[in-house]
Image (cartoon, rainbow, N blue to C red; front, side, top):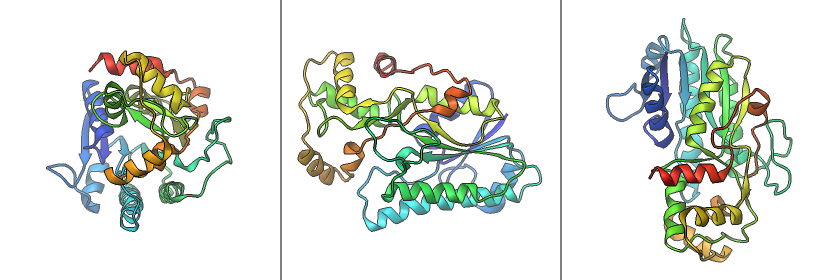
Length: 294
């Protein structure tokens, strides 16, 4: 198979590239860096003509201060990349069979009781939710009869060396792994190995279309998460971080406190109904694997 990953030089893209290449697939990246396929219309069309699957992960990180300038870049980086790819696919004589576009779980309302599924009507209307709406609108606005389209509403991806997990483990080992705020906010997550398996599963199951919640079936509260981190890391205590301290700390390290304090409680109903089986379906298995492999 020929696979093209846009925004593939980051944490998730690099992992997918290695796993697919280990499987014997040919993987190319779209990037402004190095000798990769450039973000130029004709170059994209030429590459997509010989591509089976395109995966778009491009977009500025949300882990920053949400100033006016950064908000503009967060939105533009996502919609511009999506539109560039969509226009290039539409111009192909032999377009890819599958286009998977990153999306996010931030569109769902915070609910500590009922997890959100792909059919949930409880959607929120803050900045990140509006980004998701615009991002998915750009994606699904393309009429591509020969190309199946999937929007992956992804929760926090846990990996060994990059992303949120190394930071959580470092804080835990320093004795700072207590609950954040009141600890009741839900944390939806997925092990990066299962993220790859979901991408594989979607590639193989042509009946899957539209929006897919890319997350484990076992979200948990922040307090439970940090307790399990301490247990697996064999650290007997963890200082809690009161909400006011989180807000102050977030300001000084250049991020948004809402990324730690907001609740995300989502459920992968479509995947489970389609028969997908998680290798790391609960957080204990995921943490044990990630710590053991470090």
